Amino acid sequence: MFRFLAAALALAGAAGPALARSGDPADPGAAVRSLAHRSTLAARAASAPPETAPGDWRAANARVHAVGGWRVYLKQAHAPEPAAAASVPGGAR
Image (tube, rainbow, N blue to C red; front, side, top):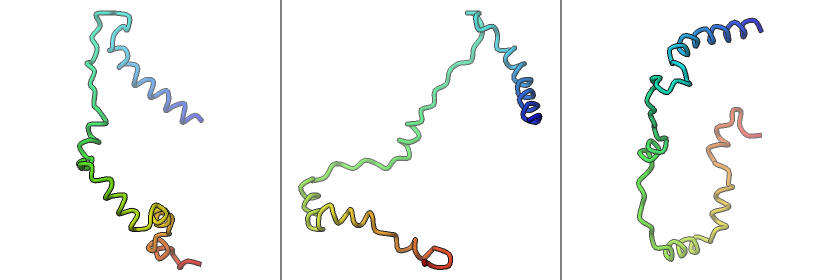
């Protein structure tokens, strides 16, 4: 408990001079730092895969129908991974 209190007081003491230099918040002529905005979406857009043109939806539907429909995709999604069972230490029991 005392260590936490000592750390909190040390942080408050370190922040004190910084707050004193910032000036009076009520003073309209006080110097302030300029705001800098860095978009998180810009970094994501740069790493995103390129968009592809929309394809023929009729051909896509025909391909799904030929495979067996949405139920086949659902079964594949719920099927266990074969590598996951082999990686269990001591083997599956």
